[in-house]
Image (cartoon, rainbow, N blue to C red; front, side, top):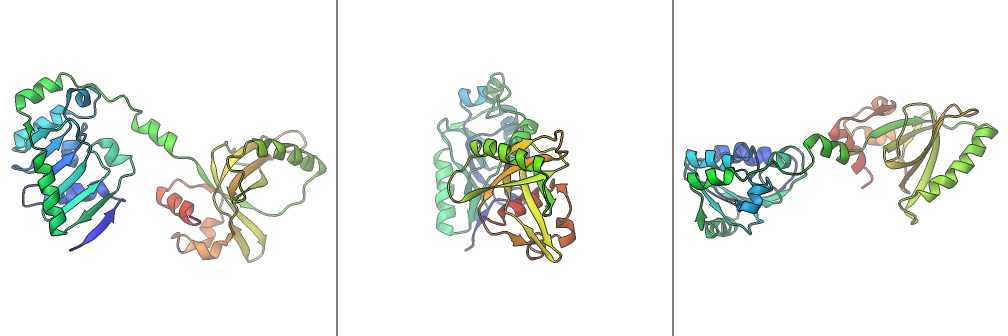
Length: 302
């Protein structure tokens, strides 16, 4: 018996296992969106239960033409209007988790499931799916439902990605002496920043620095890399930009305030290898676009 938690690559794993399955599968998944028949390539004789109520179809959550394609392949498809489960019985393994069958789930959303080969769990899950097989959907009924389908009223993948992902920067800094004008600006702007704090408890602090490029925006995430002296380069926990004062007369650089967890900084040399980076690569100003590296940086202090 094996039991595991699956998050990264959940849909590729499910699709691969369903395609490889020699036996018939039993699947109960609440919503079955456009393109889901490619994510769930069931073989003839398998059972699939979805919410194909007129409400679910009319809101675009379940896509009848995709179900019709499966029926034509020999899959038996049923509708359970109150279904909210996501259970996939594939061979001698059951996957149970969060994932509806949709392109958004497959390419955008963060999903997770537990898989197990425990015999009793597999048998119970299979029995659960089959208990929901009450109202079978015929080709004629699916053609009727297809006339009710409307595109889901949710943000496009591109819009959601832009909203969900904040810009993450590595920022190289070193101690410097400020002019009197810069000190005056810093005192004034720090008062503004303190009014814009998100976390006022003892577990967070505000860092300030002067920077020429790039132009930061509030909400950006910054990882500061401070070169204190030769051989001592420290990395601060990721912080969120809460205030930016653009360059002005007497201060050619932007004044940036970052709110971050008040945790101990770490030497760049100590974190380079766990991140799969070199110390040199971390001591370079840049925006982090690699999602895996971004996630690894954000988890370092979690």
